[in-house]
Image (tube, rainbow, N blue to C red; front, side, top):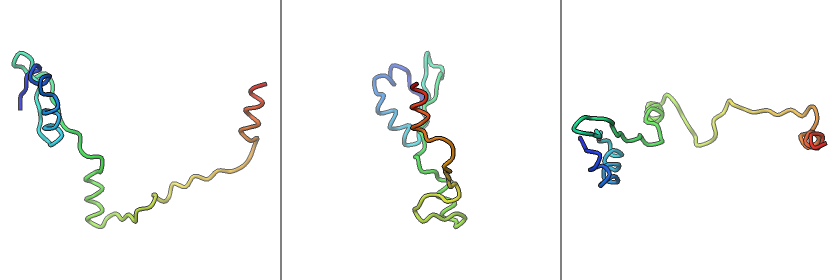
Length: 87
């Protein structure tokens, strides 16, 4: 759908809603297309949903495993470093 700049300014929310629903909006100036407005897909990725539906991936609702962050106590505590820095 082609829309002039003046028309877009007058009915911005209507055209944003149409773009969100998947329609491509072409913005025109002096009857020449100068920009395109497209909707952003939903946050949940269709690719992940497809993998889950195909059984390639599974999820039980928890946090992902494998990226365990282990902290080890060595050196000076942060509080001591801050006190030293303050002088």
